[in-house]
Image (cartoon, rainbow, N blue to C red; front, side):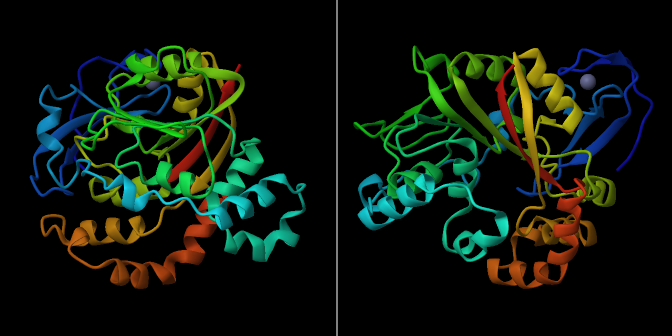
Length: 322
Ligand SMILES: [Zn+2]
């Protein structure tokens, strides 16, 4: 991580004009090893690429883009799962300790939905849905008002009673209002995160919630690994938020942060370690999932501790209308 003397830059999140600290980051994941300039806002802490490359599409090669889905094959509804999920979302809240075994039996998103008051009839938008894996999973668990938008969607547009998936962005939301809007590792890719957040807020029902999962720059991973931090991903990650900058962004868009949950991310610590040992080898992606899991295992206790003290690589933000 190199540092050079910067000119005055304006933060795209909080508007602070200053000589923000500048960092040079090298593309590693796709193996182009091009260098990009970022600055970290002195006021809100958001790490942002400067300038935004005009040819971003070039950096989303085939491996990174969506692939066509065989909708009919993957999206199978299971009545068994539907009723199990219904039961889980219906039963009263119990203390954490008494739910230990149940927690392991059900996918994590069901517990999160339960906490947020989301049920199978809630209208859910997955903004930047990628290959729609999450929507298809929700469908199999009996959720029935599902919407997906992705500018890189390459499959056929889907429009059924229970699921709509379209290629595009927020300009296509028309008069839809949602109970839950999910931005799963999407906000860091947006050129204008404030414009998108504000628009999504306008499509949120009064008691609705926006769930933002994103890397965190104010984390031990960023401080330890610098340019080798797997969550940096230049130039595709245009804005890497701090907790403070997310709160400011939310406020500017008529939202408030209701809760932050910290998450160390599966495998990513190991990937950062591999990048830091040999950044030009592309080694982080060359090893198998099994090997990554094996290498990550000894770190699990440490990573859980980082989550507990709020110093982990990623976070999940619950945003509600302020
Ligand atoms: Zn700022």
